Length: 231
Image (cartoon, rainbow, N blue to C red; front, top):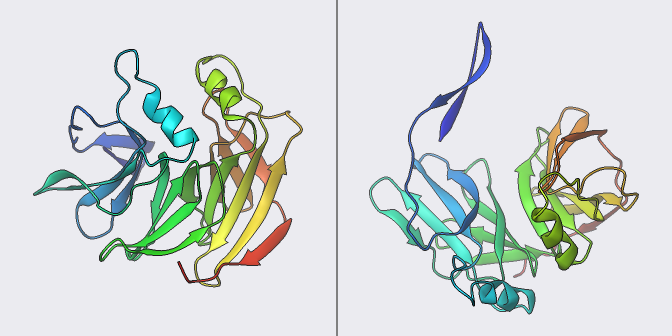
């Protein structure tokens, strides 16, 4: 991993270290565990191999568990976090105090765990959630896909193609537990968002297949709901 360093010559990346993933690792996203020197990654499904390599993905599509969280620590290396099995583990984010983990189950919902025992605290009703990112407003932003998965898969095979599937962006306030829909985009003028980063008065939207980052003014709330704390 790299450290972002700001100096007189501008912003640069400084190489710090690496962690060699196990052979069966098929990781998607990563989040640091504050104060531990460790991190969490999401294992989507078993690494595709051979003629039946895509079978795990097909299992995930019909809602069967294929992925989970993996924890890395300096002393213990990589180990599966028991009790986190889901249908395609995708984005992951951790609260600033390190007490809560949010994980996108792509074919399900956002799973919210405590980091003490990784018990499920509650879920957020967002299907096809891709990546998670904290904004400078203290809101957790979640980009999700509204198009057919087959179309998204096609886009991923075409690196020079700006995929324009429908997508949504939600914000979640962990203090008030308000989940709000910020964008419900279907105009197909910009690439499908797979991550939304909120900085000041704008959202920066990355994509899984395209050659550009999109910047849009921070949108107003289209709708909101308060999430029940019960699992």
